[in-house]
Image 1 (tube, one colour):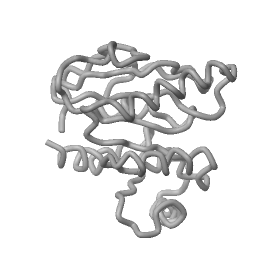
Image 2: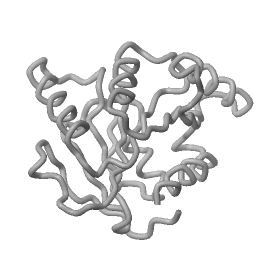
Image 3: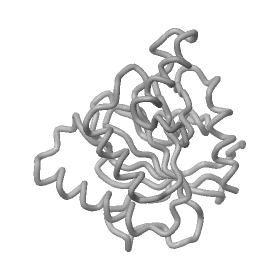
Image 4: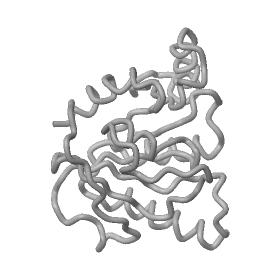
Length: 193
């Protein structure tokens, strides 16, 4: 799939701020430093569509990116590492949960995890929450450029065995540096349309 005119649409913290069209939404979840913004930028071949930061936890709202009026990429605030106060963490957690439970346009949840590490307790909690939501989901093992190409498949398999030993959910490697993995993810997205 080629996206010609991706654009930032809106940042939201409540349902009344969500886009009011019926476009499908592909939602990105993961911890603060897993590379959700870089994922968006690389997938649509733009360097600065989604803002990236060297300091994790900068995303504090739900960001909607319109993809040629075909669908939205929706970037949720990450969990872990952020320097938010406890009060702010609760507030952000509440509007994320509200979005995931109430949005009627979620077509797919893309759960990004770091390929180099076993899932953290927070990753496992988020994964269980996604499964309980009963939404379609794929798992992206991100930062595949940080390990040797010959080891990528075995690392992905290790993550799959750890999170979903039944192997009934798609796990795919990804790297914002090596663009060789994008095509497989686009194939999964195209199945929705």
